[in-house]
Length: 126
Image (cartoon, rainbow, N blue to C red; front, side, top):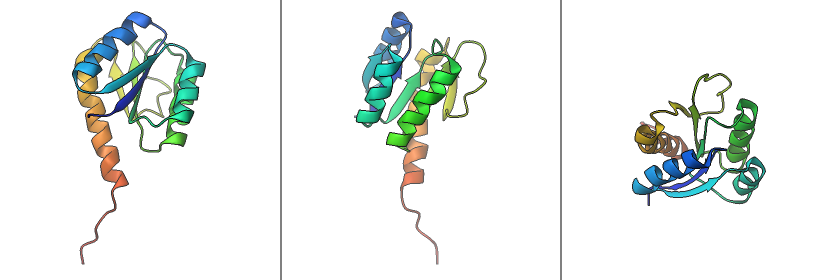
């Protein structure tokens, strides 16, 4: 299994398209269009990745990212943008929403791989 992802956005048609692309890439995907419920899910369960759509206001995106990171410091946070990428400091990766369906699975795998390496104990030479 490639990982468990929570995909959050307010535009259902975009959520469905993202979910299909990620599922076809081997991920287990939960989609939600309600920020309050998304926050609850992030507090109650462990996800390997969090995808935040461009329809979510910037402050809310960062709040959801922080909630996910509090529960699981190794969660891969990917923010999609349609115009501005301002206030994306909590993101591990930022992708253009118009090309995200093609690039999203690989971006998530890459960030998850980097986070796994940071999590593993480092052996010292000597």
